[in-house]
Length: 475
Image 1: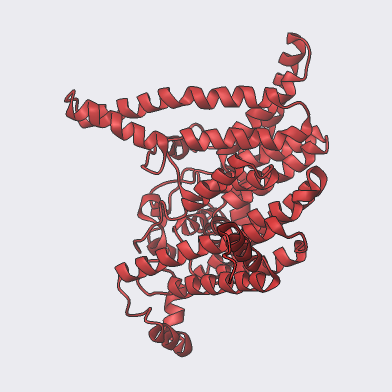
Image 2: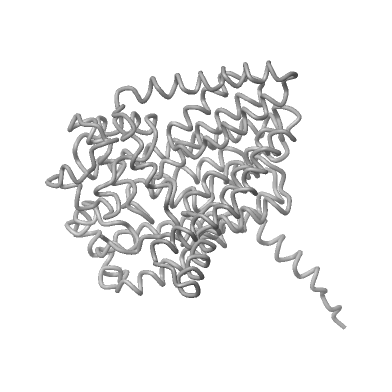
């Protein structure tokens, strides 16, 4: 008589099969196949998945590729069909990533070479297809072009000034008449990439996305070496968590978002800091702020940590003045070629007023505005303004409390990655505007911390936001 197999035994058998060498190869093949499907979908001529670009025109002129898209049914697919298929592929991609997490949690025989091999293959594929998820890379290309080729100031001159430029067709409507909202380090790198690529739109897409792929690879190496120093037992697992994450690949590399570059400087600063190199780490973190201003919250956290280690009010005031002077000196020197008075930051300040339903603050703002509008019968403009203010007043204390207490809880340099993680996490939870690529601010920090419940939930929820904010319109 056969002995019944328990549910636990069946589950263990499934897990053993999924994490075996054959299971590992199956996961790799599945992942590559899904990204290949995304690449094909991005070539659909209506710009639903891959944002419309000259790449689409070149593909349609290529007999072999056009025929392939016809055979796959992509050329004739409707917008709705493409959105449904892409949603299914994204769900399968998340499942494949979860499969990789399971394998690396149970096995320790896959090292940096295995991680890099798949990453390089996927980065190469994602670099040469049209931009995914959003059209932000076209704006970045245009800002670099304004400075490099038109010899004008992208902080006060908008793409609309050059309406005759062929690139203008591909820039998102929201950014056509908006000056650059990023720091000078981003601008200098954009100028360099624009000079390398020349004026060809396709060449610029490849160069800008290729640069983000290189920054992604750099982040992998920094995480690998930092975990080798902080937690060798988590080195393989933590590095894979970042390297193969779908948001890092599809949005960071495939979308060409500069958040990857910003986090390269944050990770490098952390690596220097955990090694006890205070001033080099401080300077590199200042440079990250001048890529994308959001990391100023990490700079403030670092300063609070440094001041908490000093004794006496006079010493703290002196150190605070020194840190502020160093940051201002770096900022002034880098902003100097672009300085146009307070107007230099006008676009950035307008950008701070954004709200959306992907964020807790945005939802609260809408709810409060609805109460003011439909119950108290206030005018729409006043209701929206009051709703936004009230949501910020409610949520800001939670963020400020974490910004103050997390650095003070850190006892040594090795605790700074955890401090930065908590500060970014609470910021993302309390912000009024969230886009899926913002998760790239948190992802590398999750990779550096223990695999506890907070890490699991942060990774799962953050990665699952990949469909939010996706621009499904070609214009």
